[in-house]
Length: 67
Image (cartoon, rainbow, N blue to C red; front, side, top):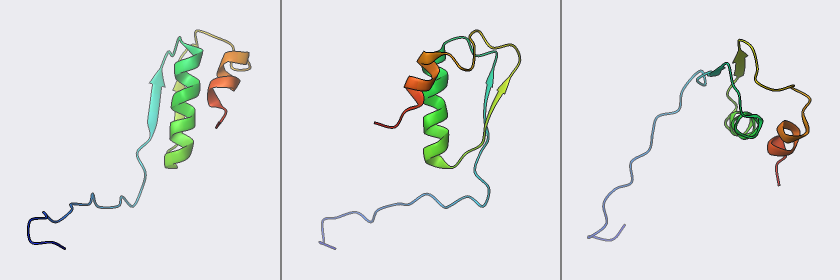
């Protein structure tokens, strides 16, 4: 490490990942993107309440695809 460099800080690893909860989600694209993020982070995703779209809707599937 150079003299001018600051030490890098690292966040501590969590024993249990946080749960991501969406309450009455209405936008399928946002839900799909959040599902992809939850999968990448290893976080459980919970969809609570009435959804504003069908879960098999094409937009949800497309937004959840990892390009």
